Structures are given as structure tokens and as C-alpha cells.
Length: 330
Image 1 (tube, rainbow, N blue to C red):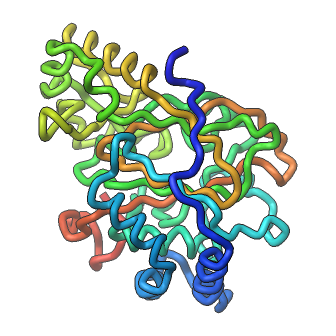
Image 2 (image 1 turned 135 degrees about the horizontal axis):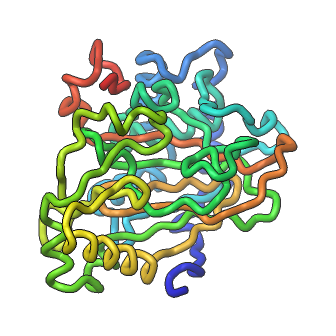
């Protein structure tokens, strides 16, 4: 199938000296043993530590923040993940990282370089750093606990304040090293759309409901389930709000356009085979992502990613965040 077997290398790789600097800063942030990732004080420390990260890392992230390029994806490899020091891959549903660790510190520092970390109370109990791991009995779950193919989506397009970026850090690859993150950007897919398809995708003829990770009753009770377009903004460089699993077209032309968009994404998709120390930044405004299938063993050494969301403007969601924190309560 076109677009599904394109493997890519990192956009930039840290050299050993820069990796050592990152590790030193991350260890300092996680040295207390009792620091909570979700506390405003710890996030403030991570925000300050960002300024001490290697110049080339900060410059690369800053340039991506200004313009996310043709693919809307940035892959940085060589971050310091000590495989020998890792605990077993979490196995519980809804697993999150509450206590400061080196990987959580690395993830949060980069998030602070992009903007501000963000979480949703209804998803993963509002944790800023979330585990993406397979869970026994959830193989067919269409979300981060499953191991079946995960269809293309932007994160939380149903919400009035979806994240601007999604950042993943790979701690462990899957045993067979076949799992891949699939990404497809609108800047590659747009030229493949017909004029009629584009027109329909810009019309408010779609409803996107919360994904399964928000719980089984979220879609039924969602007050924001009003018709929206899939594409919005500049016609030549639009934003996307879409999830193949939970976006429903309301008209015949919308149904045809959504299928056309899916074909364009498949034709232009890339597969990112992540290894420990790989960090992926996805511009959630212009890029959809998913995952290939893989076979977990549930032996403590399964695939393990950590994830956080980022907003470039925390204030715009102030009415959703109690006490001006980083958690959207509604």
C-alpha cells in the first residue's frame, strides 16, 4: 500500500556530549525522589532547565515551533535512556508517570521549550506524563493500551482546546521491533484532494466525539459534540481536526470527502520505527498519527513510550483550568 512502508531516520541526533548535558539536567530534576511531575513547582523547574539544554537542541525545537515543515513531525534521537536502570514496562490500564524520573524530565523540558505541558482530567486521570504501553486483555482497544493497528487521528479534536503538539519519548521498543508510529501531514496530503473534497472538508459537516481513552460514556455526555469542519484556517495550509474512529460525516459529500482524505493520508504516510532515546514531536494541528500492530509478551519488557501534550498558549484555556494549573478539568 502506498505510503505505509517509508521508514525514516532522525531529523537530528544528539552527540555524546549533548546527551550527557541532557542527562545531567534530567537527573537534577529527578534527584529528590519525591518530586511530583504534575506539580506547578516541578514544571517551573523543568521550564527553567530548558534554558540550559544544549544550544542545537533548543534551536532545532525552536525552528520546528515556528514552522513544522512539510511533514509536521520532528524526530530527535540520542536522548539518554538508561535501559539497565528502567523498571519493568507498566502493565496496568491508565498507567501514568507521577514521580519525577529522567525520561519524564526530558519529556517535560522539551514540552516547556515548545510551550506549556497540558493534560485532560478525563483522560489518564489528568497526568502530564502518560505511559503508552500494551495492556493484557486490551489488545483490540483502539487507543494507547492496545496493540492492534491504531487509525489516523489528531489528538482531542473534539475539545475546544486540543493540544498544539504531542510529544512522545521511546523508552523501550517492542520485542520484534516491528511497531511503528505512522504519521501523515496535511501539507503532503492536500495536493491529492479534489476541489470538491476540499470544499466539503472545510464545511461544518462532521462530528468528532471523545476517543475511548476518555471513557465509555464520554461521547454520550459530550456537550461540545457540535458539527465542525475537518479542515480549517488557510486554504493553502489548513489545520486538521479528525479521528478516523470517532469522526462521523453528516452528509453524503462529507462521507465521500472523509474517505478521500483517508486515501490521501495513506498515500503520503510515513512509518517511524522508534528506538530507545528517540523523541517525536508531532504538530497536532497539521499532522495525524497512528500505529502499526505489534505482539506484546507482557513480560515486563514490552514497548514503552511516554507522552505529553503541549499548548503554545496556555491562557486561551484559562476557563477550563482550575487555579491556573496545567490540567483541563472540562
